[in-house]
Image (tube, rainbow, N blue to C red; front, side, top):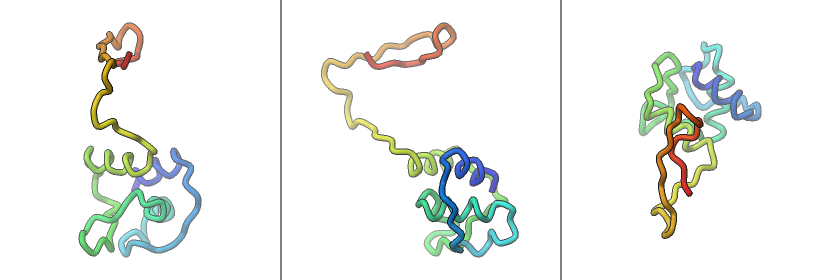
Length: 101
């Protein structure tokens, strides 16, 4: 549930109070959970029915990655274009990490 609040506030998702899940009605995060579902960011925790969100279960790193992938307009190149060189930089010195040049 807390993850739903974090994402809906961070992404400024619009209010949507449709009922997608049967197990979030007693949660203080019900509105946030429903916003995530309306935005297509979450699909439920009991496939294939996906009638539950499981708001009291911890979110794994993989689940959070899936939520962020659905939420953010990210594009991943299939291959590094010719002429592009990867350079590793010292993140302690400049805070940039690995950069494309």
